Amino acid sequence: MKLAPLIILFLFVAGCQTLPVIKEPLPSEKTSLACPFPFLHKPATLIHAIEARMAGSAKSAVIGITSANPATRELSCAIMTAEGMVLFEAKESAGTLYVSRALPPFDAPAFAQNMINDIKLIFFSPEGNLQKAGFLPTGDAVCRWRSQNAAIIDVREDGNDKVEILRYSSCGKLKRQIKFSNLANNYYQNIELHARELANYSLLMNLIEVQSLPATNKNRTGKK
Image (tube, rainbow, N blue to C red):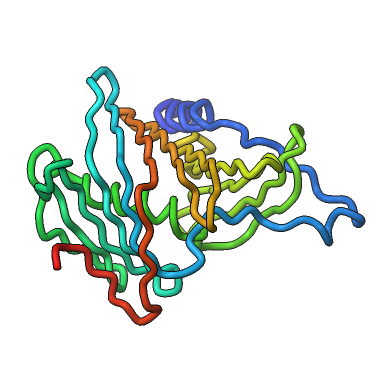
């Protein structure tokens, strides 16, 4: 009997984790249950002061500019210093990523795609199939999606305008945790992202300004 396949299977199963249990709503609760929606409702450009921290490294502060259209799921983004120097600039349109500027350390392999994926997770509603809608044991309302790449996304709300997005791998490992707080004029003023990778990192995003965009705008970010 060959042991290698069994060992691989054991390691795979051992590495998987159990997702939080979602309680189905009672018939009387179904009419009042709505999926939490911290995402953009309309095209906008958002400017954030961002504090970034990599595992074991000091904090760094930058300005992030994101133009996003939730209807077309097109977006562009830029990272700048407080003095206005552009460190990184990219956009995604029709599923294709274009990077126009990437200075170190933002030129690292896969940085651009990971950043775009994080932005979409924050500002766009999940793609894929809604699997469950109900309540956690804590009483938080929650909706669970399974995306096209088999990732699992929970969006939950505690009833006090505090919303969380949790993205799990297909095996149930928590990969991203995003916390939204201080809702004002349909925009959350504070967003906190924690990424769990080989090199963990966190982002604390404080909203500076929001500019509405026309629905037909191509969402290009850059200097006028």
